[in-house]
Amino acid sequence: QVQLVESGGGLVQAGGSLRLSCAASGRTFSSYPMGWFRQAPGKEREFVAAITRSGSSKYYTDSVKGRFTISRDNAKNTVYLQMNSLKPEDTALYYCAAAKYGTPTARLGMPNEYAYWGQGTQVTVSS
Image 1 (spheres, rainbow, N blue to C red):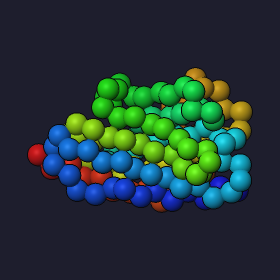
Image 2: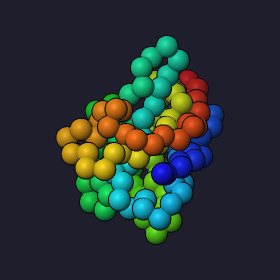
Image 3: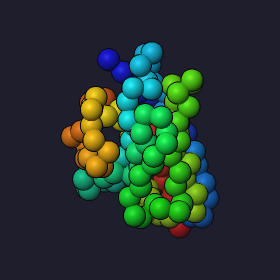
């Protein structure tokens, strides 16, 4: 069992930056690929970024490439999402999630491949 707690959300002006953190419980954090998803009101949950267990490979949705960076610190059981050059369309509830054991990297963009989810942290970008 893995419990995930996100933090770092808030209100920021367009062009600003935020860093989200996701702290995981348990001693097996390094066993899980991790992902960030977001959900805006009235929209489906969408993939933002994912990182493999060692952190050697990272994946992003096209709309955040070059602006967002996912990273992890396995010694601290924490995954991060650095968000720069924020836009109003980035406004959403952001969730971190731990993928199911054995999830292939090609499927890390699929929400149903994730077994554990945090409660979410709100990011609001004003124009």
